[in-house]
Image (tube, rainbow, N blue to C red; front, side, top):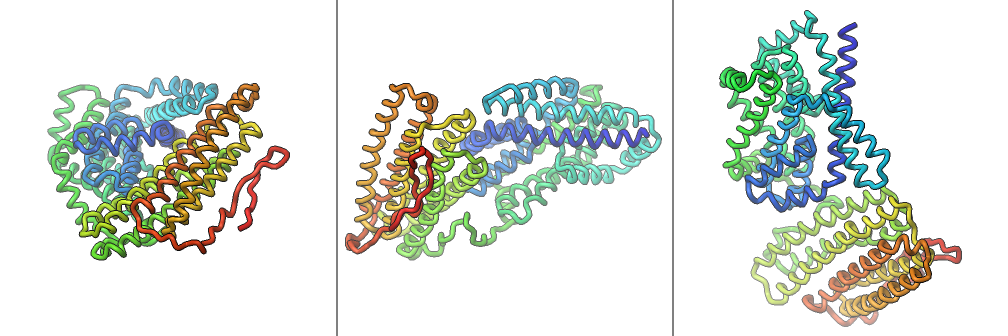
Length: 571
């Protein structure tokens, strides 16, 4: 009966630990995921700073896997280089050791109060910001509560002959201990779980320190091997990041294996506390790896590029479709292909822009998630296209080719800015309106629909002007944008007049309404820039009097009951 209870408690404790790590990581990514990505992109040029940042991020997320996922996305988008990524990985390995030190400090004893405080914040806070903080606290508490349950389950087993025999076999066969620890880490996808169990065994004097060290080595290799398997079939950059993690750990273990006994003696001399002995070994191992490999990250990056060579990526809706560096010797053709790629970007921008009002009208988390993914696609394509155009500018170009290429650089930048405005301003306002259970007045809806339809019309004209190199449409876009400037002023005055009348819905949504109208105006400015780049930098033709411009197929209107609906506009 003891074994049955222990196994069930171990399974439950493991579940709580893993779920706690998931909740903690999810909460922190919601609070600061984008800011952390931006910090990683800006602060990884210096190796020491990159290592410190990697350690900090991993301490926050309590998972080197979460840090690796962020690094993979940044390297795939060419925001940071593989060399910068390697320094962050070394720091992330140091960050994972903090959990072990907290276990040694018996942080498990305060797990229940932390869970209670986190749950209280979640249930009684109205703002999402505080709910996410509560989620982080609850995840942290559940992590250590799971460890506490496992510790209580293992305590009676210390006197069980079968369990004692099993541990004795592991102690007598170091390589078997490493394989078991690596396999267990792979199965649960968490080195923290394995290391936590090893520490609990050591703290209850069930295993000697040397046996614990071999188990630690296995856990370190196991977590890296998990990353390698999960990266199979993904991008080459992802595979290089995962391979780097595995090589760091494997080489580190091979270097430390001959010195297990001296290492155990040194840690025993430092402290008599078994928990701190294991935690200190884990910390020393990862710090030593970081110190050893940090000076050679550039050479290591080249080695990884040799081990995991580039492969030709298949065509997809997200990857660049038309950028071919072999065309640089024919700048005219290369410029044409870059223009087609920019039209590919414009398709994504059009899809995002058309969904602004539907999201403002009725917030849909699934639609919001699709738009966030769409913005990531725009960023990826814009980065690749800008890199392509920058390389093209280094070729021998005529004055006309140089001007056209520079014009395309400005156009790419403006499309990317539009995606940023939609993500950081309009989508944020839509979510805020939904969270606070607010709605615009009928007049407010009508104003936003009017502005939305004008933006859709301008978007259609600007994109068509780019696709056809039509100066006539470029001039039409300029006129439309001037109309939108006048419209924004009239809508602002109309909104102020409604506020003076004391309309409650208008007062409640005033800041959101004005910010939405202003964001639309900023989008119109970038669309005008895109169209006018044709007349400023690009040679375009004026013989397009016969060009028939088909209006956007879907617009919005408010009916007599104050309800908005999509309507078809005849050509």
